[in-house]
Length: 557
Image (cartoon, rainbow, N blue to C red; front, side, top):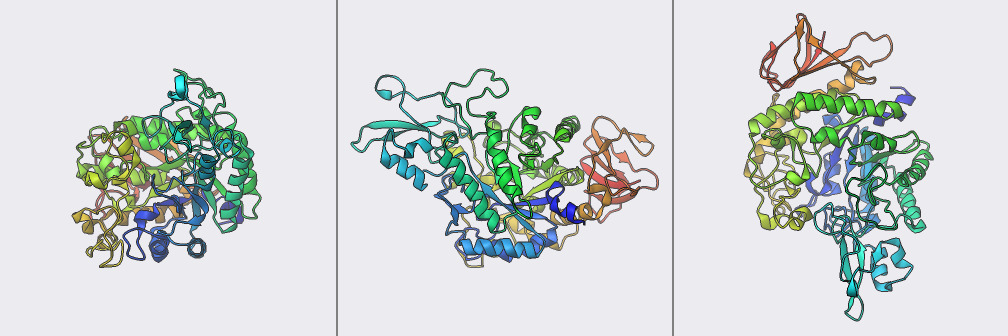
């Protein structure tokens, strides 16, 4: 790989998402930690990933799984120390794996020193100007300043109490009350976050993942949300002023000898507005949530792929592909449902699923996304085919989405259950045998899904992921360029329920392309005569003679 290609590693990287609390427990206290991750770097290297993205590992009360940050320059003691984080970044790089850390710029923890100082200083103080404190409406200020709705359901304002015990001002939180929103019109807020970026870049972080990236800027007049806001008209989503923030961040990232990468979490239905964040002087990439939320349906998936690639082309940014993350129902469970799409508002207890069907589809989906042009994200445990854990005792659920829904929404804990590494033991190898129970209980059957069990099984999900990521790295056709949709596979025409495309984006002069076929229809797809089967999602112990329903194959014509 040339220096230029290496500098733009992020364009086609495989990035593995680590939720530290649930990855591996090094000290036996029941909570995942940095020591656990360091002990598993060999596994991640062998899996074939290029980078690790860590969800927040900072000091936090963990009111929202670490996305309520109290100190960006310190590691939460339950995860380890700053010195351990620095060692982890260096050790991962030694085995060829870069590190991306999470930054949450929209809000901080209610335990953050700035917010505690703001509460202590009182109305009208300089300390409160870093947040959104406002008097209430109506007589006595008892009414909310706005009727904005929280992303975690419920209201977006919480009232303070004055030192004399009387009701005080209200403060804004687009998420939970423990996550007060920052005022990005304040110079202290902008300066602090640029310094946070430098802090982690100086310690070897290759990039920053930006949480809730489209929410930072608010209309200072705090108007109500229009019934149908036009582009840039929403009072707290996708404000035009956001782009000045990310241009300044890009300048920081580009100031390093090895430029750092900015990855945005941008949930926007308008693709033109979405790609504005990916202009050459802003973010490098952003998550593709549209694809992740689509059902297992050929027309819907093709539409999402085409729309995504068409939107990214004018700004020269690579697309990203992801099947799940720490917020989303795992693919094995989701794809086994009658409605296999994803929407936060639709999550409910007791939704039936066919795990065998979901597993077949998840295997095929893994090959589909690995064959698409751009960067690939893998959420920890998806390479093991772990299902969503949907029978956790309700008293153990910790996600605020569950609590704020009045107990209707099961929340996101089901995709955050600690990973199984061995067939047996007190925590299936998540922590040392005899250690404390994991912070969320693992299903009794998870020994059969453990890394140890799957490493011995050539037909396992883990084996499939390892083969797919190795082939993705080895195949010149998958290293760049776009894709061409195909109307036929060999001599056989394909219908609307089959995805078939060619990748031939290798170096100039390389004529050996690759074809990906994913059969979502009821009838098998015949293999072209003389085709070389590079990889497929069916049982590898049996020869592939045709592409059955819910099977994907990579072919070399």
